[in-house]
Image (cartoon, rainbow, N blue to C red; front, side, top):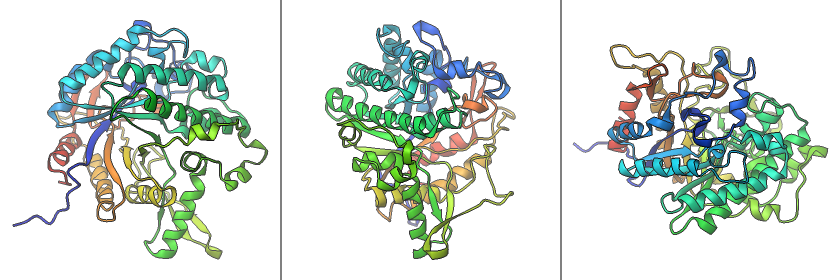
Length: 449
């Protein structure tokens, strides 16, 4: 009997994701410099339980066994990040050869295990030395990033063909310099925050330029964005139109300059006197053509058509289902509407879900197993919505589950676990969870199981 269960395309990329500062540990090994998160974690009250980025998952020394486990689970694509302070301890200036060599060894091991790297140039760990001289407030950071991007693409371009410039601009600008919840924990004016975003966009442009100049044959590059996703409360034309309008309005600051080479009049009106300062040639760099857009999607907002046709956000009730991360409301439809609106509004022709997952606090082994049915259910429901993009010809080309390992979850320290592999931080023992075995079956069969 022929199965009626729809498969994803045979070319669909299935992978997992992680970030250097969250898993590597060894924060001062082999000449690595201090990052803003290394410093921020030592600030009293900044991180749950006073946790720091060491030892994390000790991936710096255990990457070989981690890749062997990936291979055993059938995972062939891994999105990772490079630690800028490992390669340039002061952010710029002298290169740390031992840092470069570490990632050569890491890529050797990935190749040995048949795993394709998808490399994020920057995943929040700005060298503290750059922050001390202005950080993202300063255009000097743009120059430093340009040099860093050139260095890593020249060093690894023969073995890395999938590059991501930056991870979640809004998080390391607005949430780091505006609300102060993320490193370096500053609280600046709107004008300063808007300028940090502009500088980040310039760094994205330099990342693209570096790949075009030094990446070699077959190199591809894009940005990973945590776009604000809106979902129509009912899938009828009027509510879909309202959700599309809300999506457009909420994502002008990042996607408009990248896709259209300018700041929209609406965005500039909203900024008022706090609008970013732009130099000649900035938008030509920012809008250099990319090969794909990465989307990190965990949740979304529901929208309806309100009075006079304007979009209205619908508040979540107190008992709406969520993960242990309070910001992570369970909205599976986000994996359909986020890619669809990116395609329709901004003309994106290739999309990868570069992060999707859920954080819970109670994943503990019992008899050598971790029965994280809540995570398995989350993933299955979200992937069912992603599957809807296939017949609708929305160009989603791949999916990277966050995360392969439990890890340092920023302000939440080690209490919040996103991994499909449990990590005992005292012994560093890895235990694949039920969700890992379920995801392995999805990869094997190319469909939900």
